[in-house]
Amino acid sequence: MTEAALPKKKINWAEEAWQLFLLALAVLAVHTAVAKPFYIPSGSMLPTLLVGDRLIVSKYPYGYSYLSPSLNVLPRMEGRLLGSLPERGDIVVVKAPLTQDDWIKRVIGLPGDTVQMKDGQLWLNGAAVPRVRVADTVMKVTPNSDCTGMVDVQYRVIRPDGGAECHLPTWRETLPGGRSYNTLDLAALPQDNTEPVLVPEGHVFLMGDNRDNSEDSRFPAEIGGLGLLPVENIVGRAEFTTFSLDGSTSFNPLTWVTALRDRWFIGLRD
Image (tube, rainbow, N blue to C red):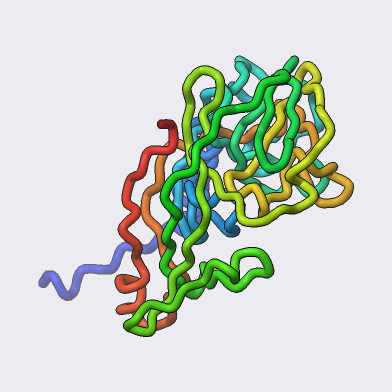
């Protein structure tokens, strides 16, 4: 009997389906217990993170809560299994209290801390957090970072070659313990001055690095912010970027390459 005459082996569709199920289960397990990818959809963490950045978020550093599974199937429970608090300055992905959407912010206040903003400067436990003016953040204008918002449009600059950039006023802030990072201060807005807030047990106070364009713990959840966030709403810690896209991709495969920014594997725990 020739090779062409051999009967074809039938596909066992039940076995194929079982293998796909096991693969999906393994992916969910990794996303739940180890790490998951995350996409930056807004400019609230500028200049640290750009719209279009892709990151890896580790799930295990702070333990696990009822919100840790990739599928929200567990009933509400307080606290965390194998839990530990984040450090001030950690960048974390959290679940918004009302919608349970994923948000990304920086940890500013821990239980027992008093947090306040005065004229755009952060105060922690009654002392001003040191900050110094540094060089402007120069950001190329791209489809997903167009610098045309009501606050940042004033910093849009047209280059001699006709291209556009955004030159954003930047401050280097250093928390107690030494964690240091850049923040944006673009305008005098109501959130630049807040009443002192005591962070209660089991909660954290979060802020975006883009202080004038971040709905965070300065705003109650009822009006779209995070409020004082329960620790069980922390999903994980941002570790590093993997790649970044400027928003110019289309169905043309060539744009998948031209849209890439030079933002490969940037550590987010410095």
